[in-house]
Length: 443
Image (cartoon, rainbow, N blue to C red; front, side, top):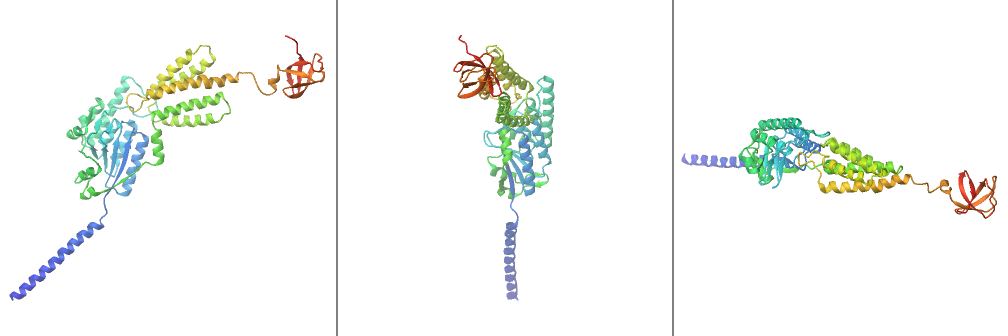
């Protein structure tokens, strides 16, 4: 009996081992067939504008189609247009994919528009040595003169402070500091931002960021251990986005505006050249497009137009350069006032403005001025050029017929005063293929 019991126990033990091995195999097998986690990554560096909003929208749609665990937005920006920022915030709020804004690398900043974007993300992360803040608004949008009176400034400030407060409240971040970043242009370091709950955590790199996402719940979804080893797939800008992102800057618009001025006026002063008109027309269209999104100041545009008028006027008016000097001054002030200088994002440096003013003055004085003056010079080619020249009669010339030799050519000629052969004559007029001449008199 005892022998049978021992045998039965041994059989049960064997079955237990087999069961454990089977369960272990099934666990490993299930782990092997489970799909790996993926996350998308985009990198934003520079001013925030319409192209940035379009880039983020495309990345969110692509990340959703891929069924990514989240979308990481690597951010380093001095700010941008509040209108584009508002569009990005709305994209974050409606995104089906969790959004993670990561301010990096060390030394990076999320200023102005960047502060709004960071606070609007599902997860806000900063790298050590970075900063955030100074979110005082530059403009609500582009395409018009920015009024500088205190009433308009106050309205804009109130709008921006209310907007950022609502963002911080929705994401359960420090509302008081968010408001001060707009009203007082407050800025803080990454460590301080973590301390006062402006951001969720600090991460030294993307790997560290993914590791710290484990256990966090966003939109009802909890990140599991698999997020640590998630594959990061970067979504790069399309070629057209890269081109427009590089073109979208005050410096490029300023240069395009100058090309438009030079090209169009160059064509007017030299009709038929064609190339200046084509180049100027293309530059003008691009400048107008960029002016619809950049905060262009109408006073700056008016001063530049006044400078052009003064340059042109001084070509004809005997002012001995007084108008040209005024044009240079007007051009300098107009260039400096061309964009809203309330923020550091939209302004032209003197290193660009001063050479542009000198080149513009030289263009109008020497190039355009020479072209206009040439149109008022006497004709130097064709039949009209023969009038006043001296010729030699090769046959007697009468009121009815005669022949003269001028500029290597033989011409029919008539004269009211009889002219003897070999006598010199002066050409008075050209009538078809016949010259009207008169005898050359001494003195």
